[in-house]
Every structure is written in structure tokens, then in C-alpha cells.
Image 1: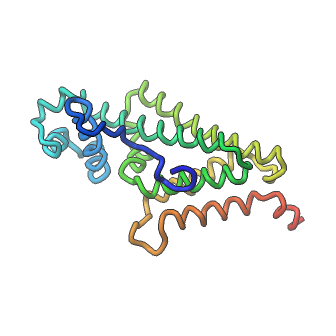
Image 2: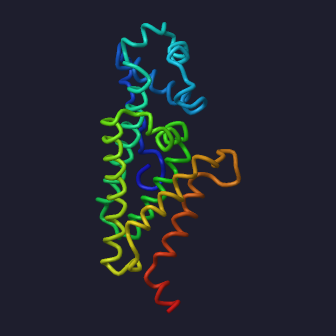
Image 3: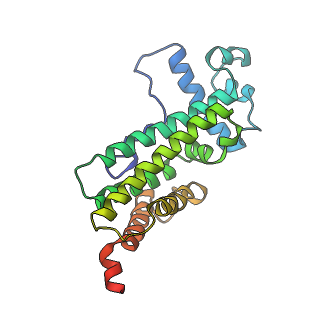
Length: 216
């Protein structure tokens, strides 16, 4: 999704063409599990269903993966890790804080809209992880939040954004964009990219230092 679309975000490690064996089968298992978890919820989904969808006996599935909890954790870790790497790249761009924040908002919104199976699960099901798995995922989420917050802080220091609470604005941004997975329709009136542009314009105009000066 770099710099302003979802093309660069990878929620699954792609198999090398022609690759066979455990790695490619694990990839298939994770891809199928995302869809099943999204459709039925984590608790209602069964390992038997996942095994059947990938052409394995249930017992053979455990050769590749230890259970539903491991599948869920790996889905989370891949998704959040990909988004963190993407946001790191946006933050490192030789551009103004305004442009980098715009890129971040568009990238995040498009990712949420284009990958509802993955990100819908990430946003709903963290509670079923083990304490150590949940701590790892929470650390990754906080890291993402701090990356966003750092762009806002830079913009405030540069006089491009109003002097508002950067952490509060970060949470507002994520609250607005994360909810897209609940209502976005790919066949609807606006594309994911068009929605992302509306969101970025809405937030950036509200943050703009010159807008605040005009109102005062």
C-alpha cells in the first residue's frame, strides 16, 4: 500500500513459485482459517472444517499447526507485523508530516477495507490468545500507535498541526478507520481509496494550523 494504496501490504507470506511441503501447506491453512474465523467466529470454527477446506484429514492438520490458538496468533502476528513495516516506511519518507500522515491514513483505511477477513479478526478476537501471545500482539499494536503518534508530534513541532493531544488524535484516527471493516461494501458507491481520501481530508483539515488561525 505504498505510498497511497494497499498494494504493498502483505498479510500472508507468499510461497515461492513451485514450492511444496510444509511451508506452502501452512500458508494455505492460514489463508483458509482467516476466512472460516471471519465467517463463523473463532469459537464456532472447527479444526475439522479447516482441514477439510485444505484437503487434509484432521489428524494430518496437526503436523503443520498445533491448534486454533496458534493459527489465530500467527494471523495476528502477520497482519500487524505487515502494517508496522508499512508504517515505518511511510514515517521514513522524505516528506512533510502532513503528507506522511495523509499516506498513513490512506494506507490504513485501504488495508482495513481490502482485508476484512484478516483485520476484522485482529480487531475482535485478541481475548482468546494466551497471555504471552496477547502481550506480544498488544506490544505490536502499541508500536503501531506510537509510530502514528510520532508523525503527529513532528507536525505539531513543525507548526503544521494544531497543538492538540497527539495520543488522543491517534486514537480518534484509528477509531474512525478501524470501523470500516464493519460497513465497507466493495460494490458500494465509493471505493476504498475514495473513502480513504475523504477520511484523510477530514482529519488533516481539522488538524491544520492555518485553519485554527482562521477561526481565532
